[in-house]
Image 1 (cartoon, rainbow, N blue to C red):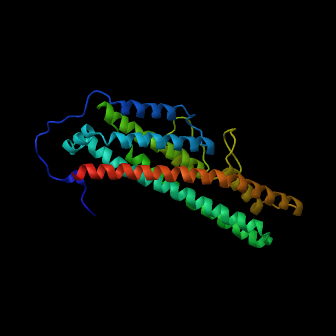
Image 2: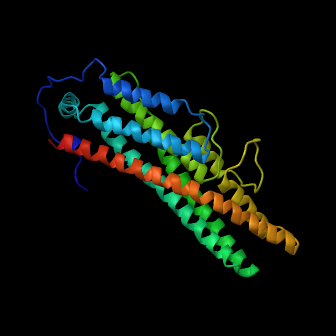
Image 3: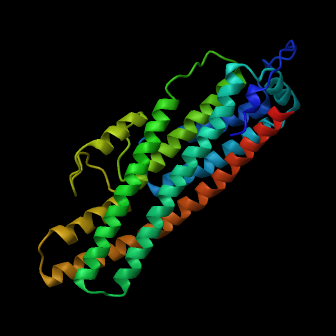
Length: 291
């Protein structure tokens, strides 16, 4: 693996310090952060998540412009061995990794849902349908395990933060923290778990590890389409019903899958746009540190 630009040996004296006066772009970043903070913290509805991802794109576009400023680039190069530069560099990779994991979980969910929906439209026999339902539910377990792994990584890597720093550094740290929080919300949607207000990543991990109770919620809140699909499918394979009830259950799942697809597609597109912005930020940092 190629060595990090941060590891280059340079012992020359530093004469350039990070500007103490906030740049207008920093103020703009803070405005975007305020917009994101205005959303209800525990909400994981598709519409809210889509809006959050759109806001994140604006926020990271602002960060990209910030990194193009000559004085910022000089400060990064001159202070490349300082902790804040290392955190900025490592954070850009962390965001890419978490975004990629979130995107993979979302795409996997979408593809499995489409396959199940296609099978139901063909009106296959009960045995074939039950096999496909079990296949889908197994895929959901795979997604939840992937989410569990990603959340554990987020909890471990984001545990230590020192906020006694300059304005620009503090803002960039806040950008990373808010971005990870949105990814956490998106993962909770994909894995069908509720986020509590101001919850930590570990709270979600703990919830993933608890014994599962199908079709039962501790909180009186509206369930997402994914939760409803999971509950309905478990009912199909676990409950003994009449032919008419069984047909109604299958039709209900088809209806839920039809509502789910455009929501997941929209989130995937927003996430892909954000992923490209995160790549641009990473490339910019690499270019700056290679000078």
